[in-house]
Image 1: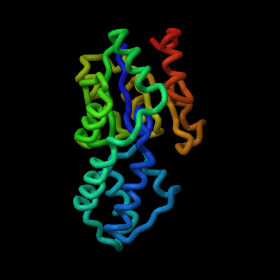
Image 2: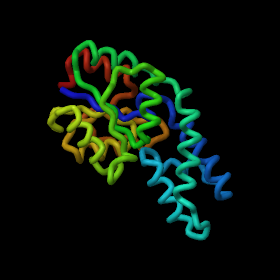
Image 3: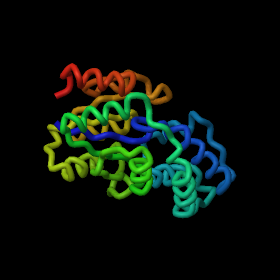
Image 4: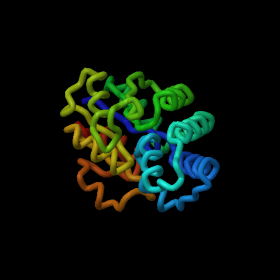
Amino acid sequence: MNVIFDMDGLLIDSEPTWKRVESEALKRALGLELTPAQLKRFTGRATRDFVRLVALDNPQLCVDQPELIELILSTMAQRIVDAPLLPGARELINFLQAEGIPMAIASSTPRMLIEAVVERHQLPIEVITSGAEAKASKPHPEVFLQAAERLNADPFDCWVFEDSLNGVIAARAASMKVVAVPATNHSPMEHFSIANRIDKNLEESLAALQRGDLS
């Protein structure tokens, strides 16, 4: 068994911070204001895809995409380290470490932000893959397949923990088993039915692991 975690909204409570930063950046750089509902459709996507889609939706604004990406990421680099771990994250990781189960983080977030979170919370996870470095981000499976390769693991032997629908789709496309832990503001619960298991939080996932329900 190998375990691959998403990060934002799964291990750390950073989704509200991402949405605030994205909203502030759009208003500052473009004078554009999106509602929370409009921002919601970008959940789980890499920043480059978020910016690209905003540019496509608003061709009249002539978006300078590299400049907007830099604005968002530089702001997040300052704020993401303040995002707390979500309930059960520390305990789940500690349990996996004690059991000798290999772990990785595969996130759409740029590597420097993932590394900052790992360092800030002293997480015992060394294998990291970033969708920002992949040719295609979630829902494409590349970032998960890269994680499996770096773990020297067969994708069929990997369990992925994800909070977003894009991430669940990507993990299933990588032939991995998936535990969905959807945030309340994500897609309707029935959309997550493609997951092997749906938990309310990581505390519930830990209990399942301790019972031997995941193998």
